[in-house]
Every structure is written in structure tokens, then in C-alpha cells.
Image 1 (spheres, rainbow, N blue to C red):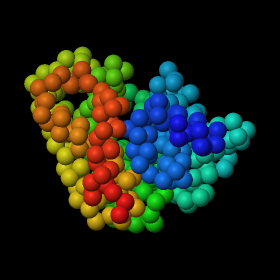
Image 2: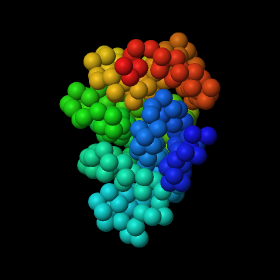
Image 3: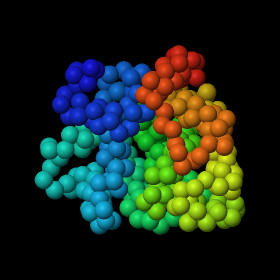
Amino acid sequence: MIEKSFGSDAAFCAGLVREHDFDRYASTLFVAPEIRRALLSLYAFNVEVTRIRDLVSQPLPGEVRLQWWRDTLAGDEHGGVEGNPVAAELLLTVQRFSLPLERLTRLIDEHQFDLYNDPMPTMAALDGYLGDTRGALFALAVRIVAPPSADTDHLAHHAGIAQGILQVIASLARDAAHRQLYVPLDLLARHDVKQEEIFAGKATPAIRTMLTDLRGEARQHLDRALELASEAPPSVRTILLPLALVRRDLARAERHRDDDPFQHQARSHLATLWTLWRAARTARFQRR
């Protein structure tokens, strides 16, 4: 295992990402070891923040956990970070690569939404949420390998929204079971779909048409991200490898529009690795 060459904190981060976010874990197999360690610390932080909603039954304990991360980034952590390998690794990465704390803090702030059952109000609100979470994660990862720029931030924004929309659709059944709604209300209204129809977990023609439109939004963002990627610095291209998975999953969903959206078929680890390996050999994602 590659993780054996890491320190214990780094190995912990690698294991956490491998278990909870295999797509991003697999994408790091195609970068240099020192870059991989930094990326895994960032992705492990994201795992810790995003899974808070699954670890608490009430919003208040979740708020406390989010505040701990804010305090840690601000240098006001209580009890230090020595006992938290993810925090220790993240702070090393922040210091080494001068990552902007405001982007990390904003990511934490956006995930407050996950703790409550308020519906996503508009498509613009969803874009903002995904841009400041998944988009920010792309942008921060890019800063590990290249100087910051408005162009790469713009690219990361579109990449994050494309990836995030597909995850919203993939998680539809899981979120519905918890009466959470990330599909925007204005999109539901446009297709005359009621919230309770989503929560019931039964596919209807209107729901399928609505999700087709939502995938169309993802396609627009993906196409724009790939267009911008062609002009990005070579060092950035391997960071964008997860877009190959977005492209694959979107193409498959567009071919199977009549499938039940509440019976999501997870992509196998083998399919993930195969897709990334093939993409890494193409000019679009090669670092040269």
C-alpha cells in the first residue's frame, strides 16, 4: 500500500478518503506523492465536514462540530489538534501551500445547510452552495499545484457545480428518506412536482423530466469546465481527473433516462479506476 510510506496522520487521511470518497482518493493515485499527501489532507477535511450530518441526530451537535473546525482554522482550537490527524495534516497543507482560510471557512459555513431540513430554494442558491463546497474543493486543490488565478477559480467553479448536481441526483433517495431536498424548489415548481412526491420516493414522468433538465444544467457546467481545462496550465490537469467520472456518469444517465432515479446504481471501484486510468492517458488530463 502506498499509504505505508506516509506518516501515521497522512495514512489516516488516506484511509478516510478511500473509505468515504473513493472517487477523489482514486484520482490522487495519478499525482506525485508529495502532492498526493496534500490533496488527501484536503479531501479528508472535506469528508469530516460533509459527514457531520450523518453523525448527529440534531442540528446543535452538528453546529458544535462545524464551529470546532472554524476555530481550528482560526488558531483558536480548544485542546490542540494533536489528537486529530486530519486537522494536523490540513494545517500543514494550509501552511505549506498558503491555502486561503476564507475559502475553507466558507466551505464549512455552507455545510450548515446540511444540518437542517430547509429545502434548496432556487437554482441560483444551489449553484452558490455547490460553488462554495465542491467548487471550492477543486479551487483549493488546484492551488496546491499552480499559482492562484481568476481563470482556474472560474474553471473550478464550473467543475464543482457539474460534479455536485450529479451527486444531488445520485443522493435523491437517501436525502428523501431524511426529508432533505437539494433539488431546487423553483425547478420543482417549473415541472409541477410537489416536495411530498420526492419524499415518497416514487418516480413519476414529471420527476424524470425535471431530473433531465437538472442533468442539462450539469452538462452545461461540465462542457464549460472542460473548455476552460483545455487552456489551463499543464500542472492543473491531473487535479481535474474527477471530471472524467462526471463525464462518464452524465453520459450514462443520459442514455438511461427511464431508469428509476430512486434506485441509484453506484459505480464500482473497478469502473472508477478504469475510467480514471483511461482519462489520465489522454492529452486533456495529462501533465505535459
